[in-house]
Image (cartoon, rainbow, N blue to C red):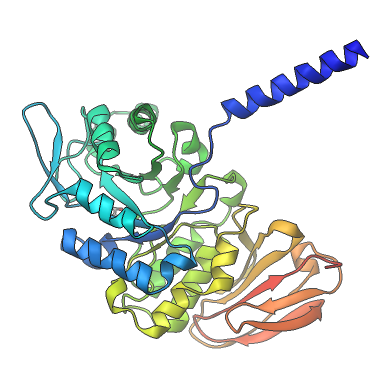
Length: 392
Ligand code: GAL
């Protein structure tokens, strides 16, 4: 008996020690929010960010799950004599802006680079990592996108793959330690265009998410090209850490509504961060309905936290699926060709047995219990299904 009690005490002690050592994930599901770059690029300022925060709240997107308002490049001003970074004239008071964004029930993100210069040529954090992290924490920043930019020059000059990669990892690790030292939970987003397969090492340098490719653009072909580059990555993904195929283009005007639904569906199956990249103050009802679709968001934010992958490809006809909490699956039948196509999937293709409950997510329609599904999928379109587990 005494031995059993002792064993129990030891087990409990070990369990709580293990718990204490496990850092709380800063993003148990993929981060959702907005980022300034895709729509505004360098034309971003305090008033515009406040307006986006207002629109995030008033449009219903905040309540649909979108939380972060992320300022991208071009906010940076000069460093003072002691090296402290200040925002430029477009952002007169970053702390006041953070307070405003927080007052709306939202969080504020910021951007920097491990290099001396950001991609738009502003001051990066090289040599000032600890100082910058402290400044961000003092302002009340909740998210940092850390963009490789000019550090890439040192990497290219390093002379070998090993040395180049070591420079990259060291730089990202350094900022992670600096952020942790502030004691403020700040979601750490690595932006390094997929250099050296970040899915293999992103979590080891403290990344919560990391970019897997170069920049997205508001074109169907580029969006698809990025999605294709995610095939095979699901096995590297663990809950709380996310492959980032870049921010959304939904609502920016370069794709049709159908193509934007394909974009959202792919991102949801990929458990990708959902960072809207449009002007939230000027959304059409259609754009809002795509970004705010409950069924799609529920797939992206599924508590199992597991990224999906391509399960079948027949040229431009692709089936992608991800596992969901409770044993179900999300499945997308993607027709990436320029003509309508007949597409089909069976539960057996997805490792499920027999008939299961099926729901068409975009149509928000129950399809009953089925063993198979087939449909004509429009050119550049998708049918997104939510499948229950067998026996459900
Ligand atoms: C790129 C980055 C973009 C954007 C831009 C700002 O490197 O991938 O998402 O942040 O820099 O200059």
